[in-house]
Length: 107
Image 1 (tube, rainbow, N blue to C red):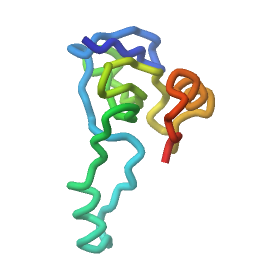
Image 2: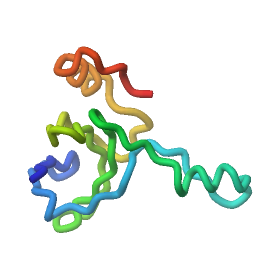
Image 3: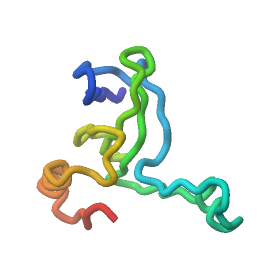
């Protein structure tokens, strides 16, 4: 079972207390977007085996959305950070790189 720490309230919560929100750091398209842009936003997602960045909501806690970096193959959690971040924090990326030397970095 995944255990993630909410960066807002500091509670370490099991995944049953959380709500998954899909891939993090997506560019969202809305009114005025082309059909191709909107289709890409709705349906095109990364599905890596390895390091992945995701959105989570502390549903049975503070209720806030946050982002997490974890390995989809081992369920290892590298860390969490605020949802307003446009990319993973540098220190979190360094932590992932230290544990996974072959990781190519956030793209």
